[in-house]
Length: 69
View 1 (cartoon, one colour):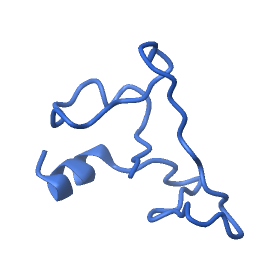
View 2 (cartoon, rainbow, N blue to C red):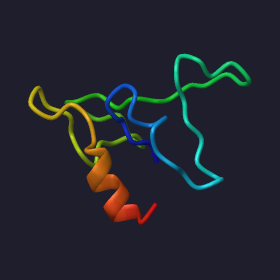
View 3 (spheres, helix red, strand yellow):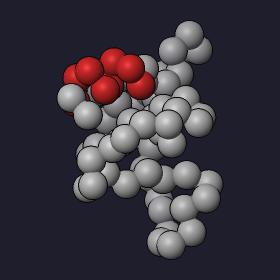
């Protein structure tokens, strides 16, 4: 499961030890994140929160509240 957060917000938070942050600076391993199509079928990939122009990212404060991290 991946969460697309606004640029710069992941580094400012504390994440559980098992969480891995993928950024343009991830150099220790190849990082590939599958991105489902906005429209059509790309099974098994699917959006749980479809990005829009008004809300392209997951709200990091809401994510923190929901996950308790």
